[in-house]
Length: 179
Image 1 (cartoon, rainbow, N blue to C red):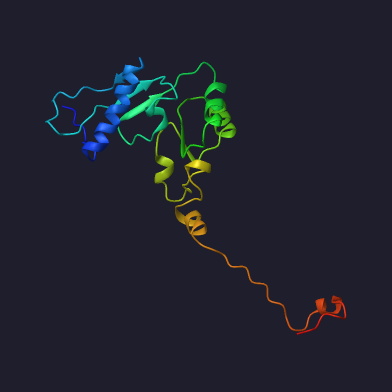
Image 2 (image 1 turned 90 degrees about the vertical axis):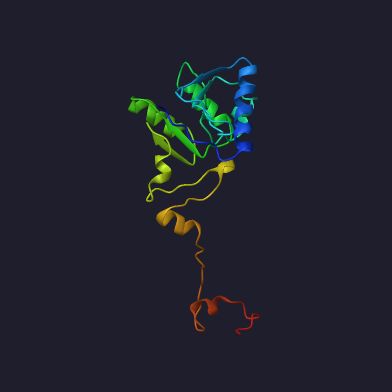
């Protein structure tokens, strides 16, 4: 038996459900990844994990943050396509690369800009306390966690202390008063 967690509230459930239904009605393929053996009780707010394959950028599933079991997937023929796609849009908070080629991985990481990245997994870069976490551009600014967080949330005050007697006083024109 597969157990599915409930979405936080009815409004959130309905919002994600609308995104998926909009994609389906636009002719986009929606793949349900698992089928629970039990039917959720009425009002349980449960959705099976779903892939939304090649949705148009105008659909809500591509414009809005989802925070649920729905993953839009874009297909490509060469690695230059997703790199161009990423670079043509606002900077993502996270970039997830899945693959076995170190050369392609390095190319993607070198040619794109994101707040953080995880390779062959998701979210792990955000869970490691020693790695800075934060966005770039529209996805946020600054870096948090550990020393990076301390530096982001701190302000180093600069102070220049000039002695009363200094060599710079001899460089002043005679009409400046030495106060």
